[in-house]
Length: 406
Image 1 (cartoon, rainbow, N blue to C red):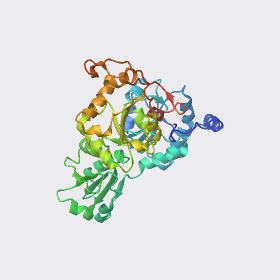
Image 2 (cartoon, rainbow, N blue to C red):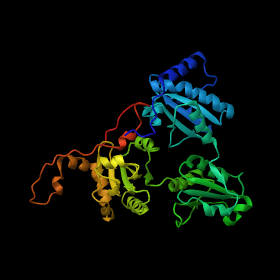
Image 3 (tube, rainbow, N blue to C red):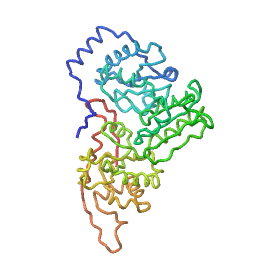
């Protein structure tokens, strides 16, 4: 399975034409070259910076150079202030320390920065002047929707995560902090604001920020920290906007796979929110200490039929829990076992210890066999990873290394 997010290689004739044109007609803009001496200063002073991490010997990097420079030309005409938008590049062979700092594992990699802070999501779209320019325009658009009447709050889409700020006026440190947070997390939450007299009923104790979680009956949560403290405000908002259990789609699959952590996935029917809620509760109860060692995800059974077939399941079997280690897939015995205290945690720990892998090849561990029962070496072949196919493609990137998985 090759998901639609992987784009076909550019037409060789078009690429050759662009390269020749680029060599004969040098671009008018100068892409800022970053090194250890200037990178922090340049990125910290840029509202938005798009950085191309490349290697001269990489053919994909060579193809991107003229496109990247022309996109820079287009954007600089719209945003002439040098600190509004910066197009920059890092020669990773010459500056391996910078490449290691930002964990570059493929060429070319396009990372977005805001005031020096690297955004979690890198640019993975089409490598064309139009697509890159449109991406930057989107990043420069206002991430906050203005509320003109508090009645609008009652009609919010409650399937989404909504962050609402109530401010006396916009020209304040509080609002600028809110705006900065919204710029970073607008892909994860919907940000809205009400200012002036409209917001007064919600500002009984001063400027106020609330979180409305998904679900019509879910209670609001109020931010109680200092709104002049960006770090605190960002940490609180990120906790609300980025759930512990994330949904995997064909659009974000490459990004999640590249994080390099095994997947613990609940496959469920789109309308089966009860199973999703149970899974979320047990992950929070049993596996919070495992955060950072495994990704907790949920997937639509209908959309991800192929991975289900890999583990000999169909949508009719959902809900199903499985681990994809990027080498093999392992199935949780029974969804109903989720309610057994510690059962899900043991499943994850058996992955890390190698027990799941051993048992697939050699049958149950001797320690799991009842006394007096003969030990049998039951060789088997565990299903291969399915989600590994969502990883960055060698038809689009030069991949630097492969990770060993369980």
